[in-house]
Image 1 (cartoon, rainbow, N blue to C red):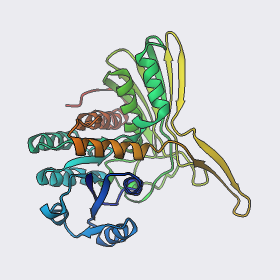
Image 2: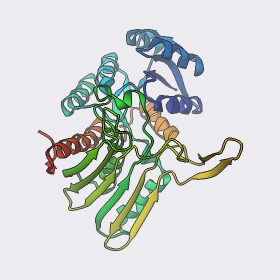
Image 3: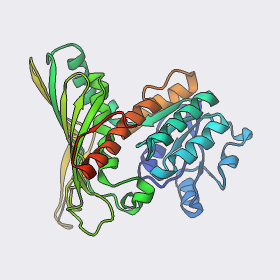
Length: 331
């Protein structure tokens, strides 16, 4: 039995994870802490668990917390991960790992010294379409990979995501990391150079960026592009996408991680939605984290994976500011 807690419901993914926990056998949501007490109490009641006013009370020995999911604002990830590490519990941290390379290294080092595992929430790795693509690439079915065109386009989530002091940026830091992680996993290569065009176009009043096009060079010679924008209008049928077109010397492949959906037309409301079905990647990720917590197995997505993906986003901002490609890793 894996006994998990959740630190903050600031991120909308916290609801996905709490729902996943409720549907998993041998996994229990022991409690919730949130620096917004009203929100924390509401969510604890919603998911039939307890609210704790402080992290120390959540991690009290009598609660026997084995692992915790950190879903606070990006800038608070470091604060919450270090609190959990001090308490000696394993951690699943929402992406991006942090908002600076220095903070990410501190988080990784503190977790190592405390003897706890730090996993980063990249649920896209668990999509069956990506797993099939990974098998094809590893088996050499596409030959040598030459280039990749990726997208992670979505709605502007609003709220603190639009506040750079809490999010560390806008669309680019929010949406770059997923596809970069998939590329790193598939290629087993690192990004060594990034160039980006970043702007605020869809909502000119935003205090942050809402669109970005990145070009990346990997150390094995692969070139990749990525559209990491909040370009989906509010009336679009689905919140966003994750797609990859992969070009190889022996074949090409295209994957859409959210292709499993049905079209729903509501004549009375005049709305059109894509309702998803099939695989729940969030539940798969939570189950994998719970397995590692329960058995002590190494987590499959490490803090360093999170750092490398975030570093590309930070490099993209630097490239956009300077108008020149930026080499990675960042100094």
